[in-house]
Image (cartoon, rainbow, N blue to C red; front, side):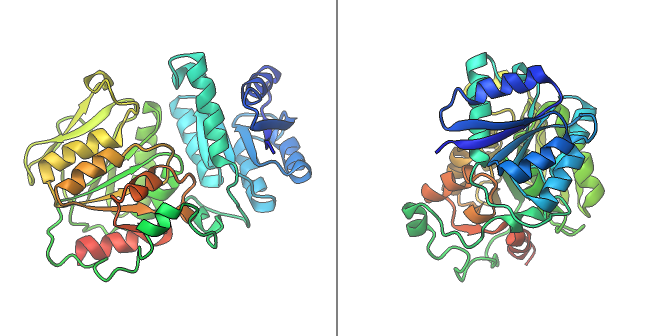
Length: 370
């Protein structure tokens, strides 16, 4: 049975375009269209779609208000379409705060080299959200992970075999023999929520620098870093080329660039490069690229965490880190928006523990600060 999609946009042309693209995939069926948020509310209630695509700026009721009302009455996975501007970034982050799970730019040429690539990306992003079970009103960014069906068992036999005791091992949370120099985090779809959940729980005296790679457009990362900085006790900033890594500061890789670390432990510096320096990397920024450089500088004195996201970015970088003796954790399936990146490191037997996002920060603090 095809996944049922509701398209919400005030542009007839854009609705027609999205419908055509989605229905090129036989697994996707557009069951309704709305030209504003008010219509979307009624259609979500009557059609019970699996996913809603939502514009931000619309008459009668804007997309952010519609997301809030939908999540309060008939929760459903929502993917936003926005402009790649500073204003668009702020509005998109507000939409994620309201309950949306993902976003894409309205200009597909901003996210893909050609039409075929853009079509596949949109189809795959929508399908990735299908099947997510949401319930109950959610009031703030980071609180929605409890909305996922936590009673669902891990669906992959290999994961059960590899991770049958994850989160219960006696050595989890005890780092007496390890002096950590860095916390490295990689994430994609659902990452803004997950990162905020973790960073808002870190203390102001956090003892190591935090390196974060979030798949996000270049116009979004600065706004996202500012938002996190306003909410957190630790300092959060978009990483700048040449700056010295400082304990207790969280560095977000700039979108559209690659972030690496050079130097020695205690005096390592950020290097921000154009993506052409790493031509084999699909993602900009790439978790693999950053983690590989972290392994060269800090060797095994690293705690690396892979959070929710599509694909397998981070798997190779985590493999490199683990070969140096680093500790690797992953977010568990039940609390992920998309269980792609964490699954990749889990089934490859790279991650030694999988944690619910609600408890991840506590485990990080116990591991690094105790």
